[in-house]
Image (cartoon, rainbow, N blue to C red):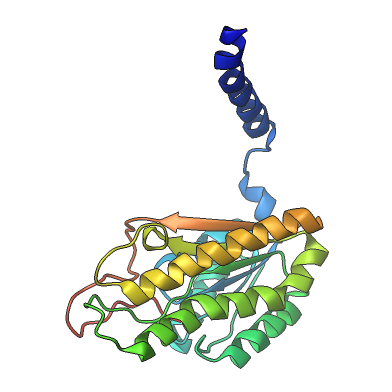
Length: 236
């Protein structure tokens, strides 16, 4: 009996884990062929590369950021790579009205929505927090609140398609670090909010998946954090 109590639970856990993960269908690029996808923060770095990968897999893509000129080039390259369609809508996620309108416009351009990829952040610098509440408010509004607005606006379309929300976060949202307190706070907020919403979807039987991506070091032309007044750029 003691043996059963000691060893049966871990053995059962291993068996169930194996069954769950082996039962899941492996990802294949063709799964995204024809899918309708939004990518925010897409004028450089991670967002740009995601748009290119989606294009190669034959998805419909709508990208957004502040830089209209960069977005034009990215949309053109997406079409060269094989995107089913590619469009851009330039604007800033500091404006919550734009965030709402952007999702509606993107949905009309593609005729629906299968996946919402949230990737943008505001400019961030590495400094000791000196009590500047404006910086904290701006980080929370752009890095967190706009994500909530975008996902809430997109949810009716995602319910129709049994779609998904992908939230690009960071190790800074799991582990506190000095010099990036406002940024870190916004990433912790993403984890708390979207992890809770994932549970709510499960309870309410809403078939819209939520994936939180915790990124470490990256090798793109995206943000690099530096001291002083130099800014890190992952465009909004």
